[in-house]
Amino acid sequence: MTRLGRSDAPPPRELLLWSLSLQDRTELQNLLNRATRIPLWRGRAAAASLATRLAAVPVIQAPWLRFDAEACWAWLEAGAAARYGIDDTLCRDTLATTAGQLDDLLTGLNDGDAPEVWQPIGALRQVRMWRTADNDGADGGGVLTAQLLFGHTAVRISPMHQEPQDLMPSDSTGVFAAVVALERIAEEINRECAVMFAALSGTDQEHS
Image (cartoon, rainbow, N blue to C red; front, side, top):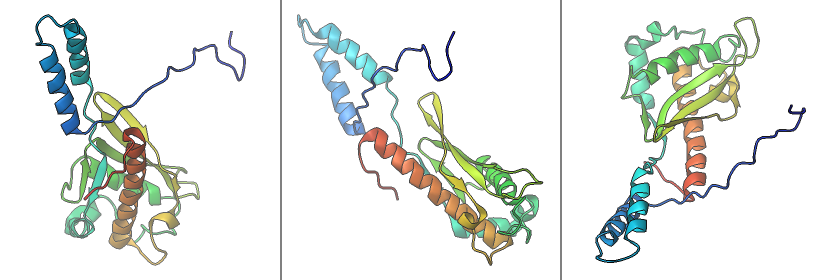
């Protein structure tokens, strides 16, 4: 029986992450493949095993979110705002519904309603906002999450809690407020993704 505050599970094994550029990976793969063809070399089996293992390691593409504010404005004005209930009730003062309205909008963008507006790149798959109070509450904020895919493994990361004042100016409403909020969400997600990817790869990443 496990006592409170203690676990009988074994400690995690040490993990070594070695980041290679795609060019370095290809060159190493070719070197190992050539080594397996050296006649009478005792290391052929080891080289073949390493080549197989290297080929099985997935290439991790840097996660990034491309957001076009002008395209977003045009998309909302062309009818998307009405479909997603974006009107003057979307503002910093509508504390009970702000995060819910933005999450509905994010759901449509995640589903590919406007790829010219919202384009996940690399390992990034989707962005959600989970409201931190229901419709009877007075929070209006939410927790952002981003789903990433590394090979066949899905990972979810979460930046800090977002309050309405973190997402939009006090004097903005409707479409303008939505565009500003989405832009700030994209910036927050990209900042978090960049930090995580740099930690995994051991390099500083720049995105265009």
